[in-house]
Length: 171
Image (cartoon, rainbow, N blue to C red; front, side, top):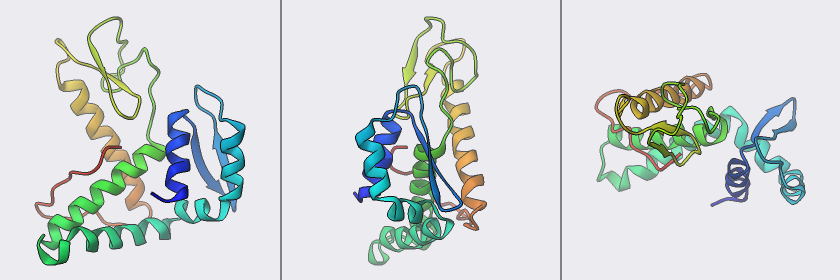
């Protein structure tokens, strides 16, 4: 894991978001304040982080990951591209994806209100049982993957076509 990836993970832990604007890093705190030590490390790694946030970085990662996922020809190009795409969707979501308040279901938007729910790895919660059942987690998954796909396509990446598996590491 690179230094930038570790910093991104730490920002996600505190619910903060990071973006680049005119060569500057903009950190938006979430529900918890961003520790001063983390802000200092972000300043020290500014060049690496800005490079990671640039569209060129995402395009390079897609190419490199697709090649890596082909396992020297043991996976088809379509499968390798699907795996790489899924990884980038998860990464984008981890960095920029929506975060719902604790009281709100990320799938349907309704209050959890003491109903059975599950906390997802990205910190969002969804209803678990009827009347919502799996509908909430499916709706949330479609929405965050759709947002990630739109963002990646906005950086001139093209989602793989065919029967590529859309499986990746956790967001």
